[in-house]
Amino acid sequence: MFARQTIIQVKIDRIDEASKLFEENVIPMFKSQAVYQGGSFLADRKSGKCICVSLWDSEKDALANEESLSYQEQLVKFMDFFKAPPFREGYEVLVQD
Image (cartoon, rainbow, N blue to C red; front, top):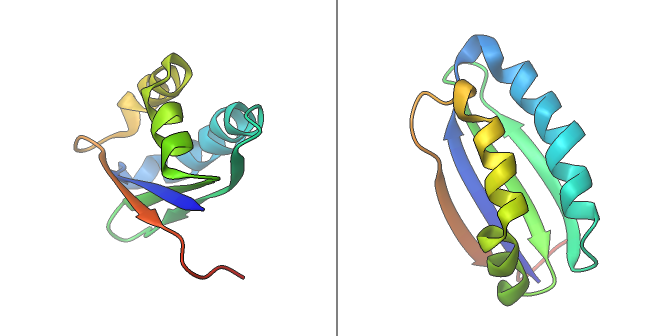
């Protein structure tokens, strides 16, 4: 399994809006792909730092999603929430409960 995380700096007063957008738009888009294994939206309400995590069958699957038009369309929806450009990282999942 492979995890992709996108770190975003969100305007503190818009964290709830950003998390709702993630839940209502991004998660359903991810779920439409058989290789998707789960996701989370994490937030530090004091700093505005948020981490969007998605789990995929493989690194290849995560990269394919990231390069897709649908991923780019979802990212654009968040532009008004950002205080800084998003930063993406990927990790191999070694242990999961």
